[in-house]
Amino acid sequence: MPESISLSAKLDLVQSLWTPHRIARFDGHQMLLARLRGDFVWHQHDGHDEVFLPLSGSLIVEFEGAEGDTVTEVRVGPGEVLVVPAGTRHRPRTADGSEVTVMLIDPLDVQHTGGVRDELTVDEFPEI
Image (cartoon, rainbow, N blue to C red):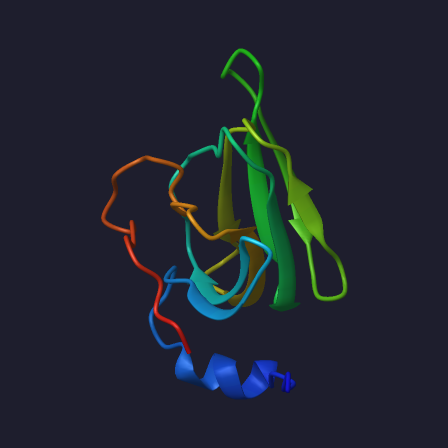
């Protein structure tokens, strides 16, 4: 039988920043929880959209303009959702050193840095 998942209990298990932790799998996708603080790496996911659902705090997602010369930002808070379309260059970040907890929905084979190798790249997500 399926069981409900306590997001708060799972978030208590997430200690490292920018490391998504898998809490569920469905139809070739996964639900991930993460703690975020500071700036992530600029990247894009060419083959799929990415879904951000902040649980606490205000997430800022920056988007690069078509020519790479402008940056637009979108703020998304608890109770809101942001879908980043496939192929859109973006960078999640938080404001003023604040921490944000977020649920992500991605395909199972996603690399969260979109193929960019960085010190924040995680090759396998912990399953909790």
